[in-house]
Length: 605
Image (tube, rainbow, N blue to C red; front, side, top):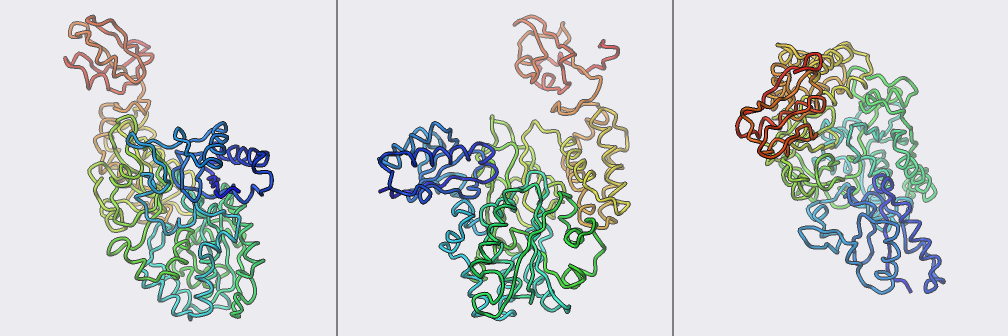
């Protein structure tokens, strides 16, 4: 009898790298294996949500030993079945190598062992399409406790005492928001989950909905009980088809088992949830624009006050939290507010989930206590920068966030610390950049995104971001002018101060923070018409070698990223201007200063 269980990561990241083929191969082999003819394979092989280390997918975890196999190929499945499942022999060559050692246990992986998983407690551990799996992991116990043992005021007090702050970006105290909505008057009240996660590089909320949708249903139902609401809505992006699919099934299963609907747990409390699928407008992540979209109107933000707690959906009191915020609620109810406050810093309690992407060895979902340093995330968890490159900066908080340069690697990540350097936690996107990134181009990329996503309702955001983008386009194509930096700062501060909603108020952040920490790169682009990384096409620029001063040492030739330099050892070298990207790498390493930058006119230097 097979006494092991195979968990296949089936989050979007692993599916994109071939996880479905791995799952199908396990089923096929086990279904047709002569020694396993009398068992139901479905019981032993199941799909789970995002495990975390996306760069190691496809992933299989063997229970109960927690043996971890990563970067799997279809032909590896037979080895796992014949050796591990049937003979209890670990397949050594399929284990992940770390520090010259093969890691056997999933929990011993560098990426996992340094995390503290609260919001991600079940994600990557249970089958998201099995309500029984969720129940077996304390699912719906918090809801039962709330409706059978606690008053509305007691629930709100627990959330307030936990000091949980909203994980969607603003960091507003969750308990206060619940209390405001509870005390508001209206004919009816609503609970809304903001799952319109649109930041480039962010996938925290998506992964929770894909891997643990019942936790969000349970949390929203608890919130409904606390504030006196009987109806909830999950507003989720259409670009998240797997999240929509798993959420839909979870809502149906919750209804069938009376965790949604009438008289939940025979308490007399009624609550139901519907999903609303958004069309992908970034601005609908702003709560008032989201409300308008649910109502069937165009997703335009509106001025505040009144705040949604007093006048939200259809003018009624409405509680809005994002997915990650709700994911913490069942654990706080079950374990208590004092348990939750042991994690984090004095003003930022609990943990935060980050989607770590970019120039790191291991990308994926990371959940750590507030107060963890950027260095710990990048080097202790994500494995550091590949190819022996230097860390240059991190963009935190998505296109609305800011840049953290290398000098702040040891800064604690929390709301207050980031605010001091002009950045924000945001929803949790964390893009790591090595020395080859041009920070002017990075700022242009993020501003291009927010300008394109501007709803156009208010002039500062609609016109101001376009003007800033025009300036950045000029700077990154060699057409920068004296005074452009000052103009960007002036425009950015004006847009922040006068825009209607959070999108416009934070859109200039990447530009302002990169100017603060990397002003020299802006000056190089504007005054020297030079991008030292070669990322920007600066027009008619080329480097040339003075033959009289060239030693023929080939140092520049070896350093050139595009192989534009040719020549024999101990003889003068040449640079092909048709290939040269004017990055300046050759000039930086030349021992005799024989290399200089030149203008190219009519294809001649």
